[in-house]
Image (cartoon, rainbow, N blue to C red; front, side):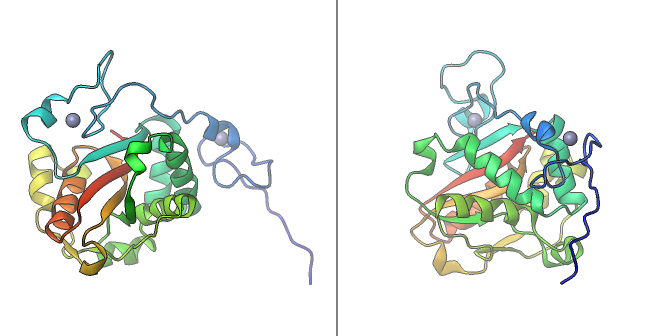
Length: 233
Ligand SMILES: [Zn+2]
Ligand SMILES: [Zn+2]
């Protein structure tokens, strides 16, 4: 066997040479800059509160609670965390899914209530056309790592996206809700029934996508849906 030829690789955010052989895509100095969110959040939708808070519901949840029981994000959608999510999604650096899934799990693992009773990990699905273009589902990569770390079964096909839709980032909040309405359907109905589902997505913005997926899964018999995202905008 010929010897391995090693090409130098560089961190995709700061441009430094990746010296540690275990570093991939991002250097450890950049990864260390990702700080999990530690301040108070709305106990239901998980939105980060600005300043002091005492565990009360946010304005939106007290008026109309979302279809999911609770949501937690590991961090804020900014800085290196945002860069890493964009590299995963748009530049197809697939191994970042595992890095980000691991980071999200580490950030949220101490929240026992959040994990209690979860029976299945399900990613927000992509439409097959988008999946073909991208080659993988970024939320699926994150979800798979969470399943690997927790030992909770993972089913990337529990839910499917039946219609292609314009990216949510191109829309205002009201249109976002309309855009995702009735575009998700169960593919493997029996796996949802009677279970507490952990729905995984990369980014949480208005909560429209997570809310719609949760609504569909509850209609199909899921006993509860909780949502985990890597970052919230
Ligand atoms: Zn770097
Ligand atoms: Zn809330």
